[in-house]
Image (tube, rainbow, N blue to C red; front, side, top):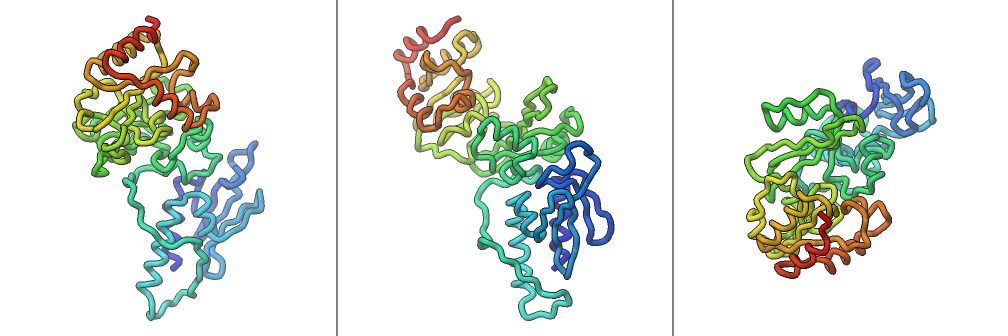
Amino acid sequence: MLYIDRAYIQRLSPQLEGFVQKKNNLYNCRCPLCGDSQKKTYKMRGFIYEKKNNFRYMCHNCGAGMSFANFLKSQNVSLYEEYVMEKWKEGKTNAGSHNHEKEVKYDFDFKPKFSTKCQFDYGERLSDLHTSHPARHYCDDRKLPKLDVLYYTPDFKFVVDKVSKGHNIPKNEKRIVIPFFNEKCELIALQGRSLDPKNSLRYITIKVKDVPKVYGLDRIDPEKTVYITEGPFDSLFLDNSLAMAGSDVDKSYFSSFSDIVFIYDNEPRNREIVKKIESTIDAGFSVFLWPEKIKEKDINDVILSGMDTLELQSIISKNTHKSLEAKLKLASWKRC
């Protein structure tokens, strides 16, 4: 079943820096386990090679050596699970048949399982990337949870062109990809967060369907309290949470939910935010107003300051207001 291994080597290759096929059944790349040479970036001492009808991985810098299956698992868990499924299916199909290749036994530590999550095919899940990867490093620095719903692409234009036409997107921009799905797991929009600190356009949001750009519809229970934040990253820290990607979302869109709490950024001197809060209260929705003791700008900053999500959830519950009470609290909160 070497053809399966070859196929998954190719599928993994975009994730391996400097990947190249040297000859038949021999592949070379910079070692993602140790980072390879830090001084000479042209050095590539990681090798995937065939030995005794098995593919293996070896790094001549750090000395790491393992089966290709274990190497694949260390780099991309989702791809590894698909690989296991392929091997499992092949074993079922070929049961009792003659196979010219030597049978290889794999000691997989889990049974094949099918995912019920919405599928996005144009990027690598951040949860599958090595912790040294720039995209993973960025998210870990921000303490972002639920990395299995975020993706990475080395070319955001390629991703956009696959799902929507007519957008003027620069080529070869490395971005974190945030897919927006509806409750049917249909892609309705996507957002790209630049990994280049010099890029003035940090976020690019693309509409795929002509519906409001609301993030997280595939993961909420509308019968429970739904929290609505300004950005997708903030929404990841709260249970049953959505995010508005832009100010074009008509609040009546959320009227079918049983209980909603809007959470805006902690900027009491920002006239635009104050106006948004006022219109939300006037529309009859509940709003969270930040207590004065909290100086951080948003939910992510609060988490970075050391507060855990349970304490944050408690603070939100104690400072959620509606109707006249909300207007009175807003009058004392705003500074503009």
